[in-house]
Image (cartoon, rainbow, N blue to C red; front, side, top):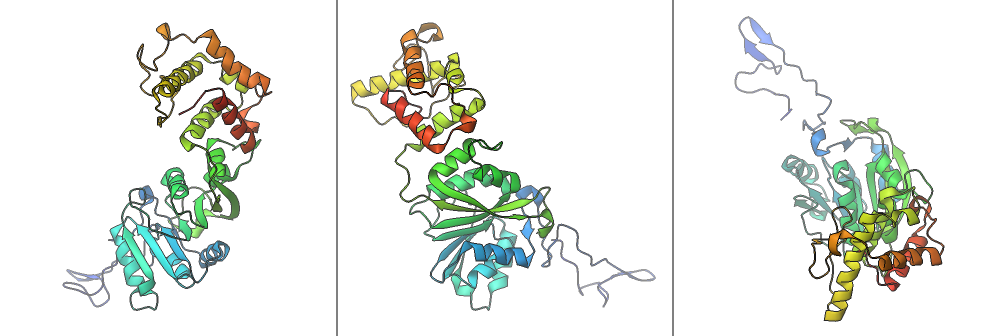
Amino acid sequence: MGKPKGKGAGGGSDGGLRVAGGVQKKSQKKGPNTGVSGLEFHKSKGQHILRNPLVVQAIVDKAGVKSTDVVLEIGPGTGNLTVKLLEKAKKVIAVELDPRMVLELQRRVQGTPYANNLQIIHGDFMRVELPYFDLCVANIPYNISSPLTFKLLAHRPAFRAAVIMYQHEFAMRLVAKAGDNLYSRLAVNTQLLARVSHLLKVGKNNFRPPPKVDSSVVRIEPRHPPPPVNFLEWDGLVRLCFSRKNKTLGAIFKQTNTLQALETNWRTYQDDAMDGDDDNDDAMTVDGGAGGGGGGGRGGRRAGGKVSPEFKELVMKVLEDNGLDTNRSSKMSQEEFLQLLALFNAAGIHFA
């Protein structure tokens, strides 16, 4: 695929094709999406191979690979980063979906001292069960950046760090702080679970084929131990707050659909407490109501979808008594979100 033809049946000694009147030259020039091995890279699959050896080496150096480390690499491609990792690590586990890249990677280490230190998992990273690893170093397909990051952060036992190449804007959203323009639910959720820092920016011309935008390398260090927070409930609160991040919390929590969903959830928790069932793991949804929020059954909304005055007063009391009603999500720190969740929970109001 994309490989130039050499001598063969019907071919001339110079690699051309025999035609009437002589030899027709066939261009050996590789296309812009073709690597040195002749493999064609597919942009639609997020295949942008890092070709600058100085950038590859900088990533390995900043990762702090130890000789005892098991390193996970996601989407190794043709192995430019893999080979450098093998020089430092005890073992590299590479997860690759493209069978052509798997064969190229096997060919590249065959007969080298590192052949026995490389384990290749042929499959979709989002579907495979990950083995133990100490460190993750990867130039990932950008179209799965968010789910990939949270799959890593959910992995147990927790790893020491991940050094990952992201699309530049996504990377800036990951590391954004309260008050930054790019501060969002992504930053709040990631930084609840890990410390994140920007390491270096990488221009698009360092890749083959070049992506449309620049990239950045980010270091992610999972928090040990993880915060004692129900992540589904935390995400339910943060999702709601960032639905209109520049509005005050007072304005957000006065919206009828928000109050309806919260009251449905509140009544469900009350019923569960009466039944002795505290195993409610469903995420609350605002648009369209809480999970399966039907009419008059157990945990259902009040008749006509109205919010009870008592419940609305309870929600506002939590915010106003603690001076949070004028806060805006775009300016709130992790500690303030944790405080907000704790105060709502103490009042019996839940988000999952």
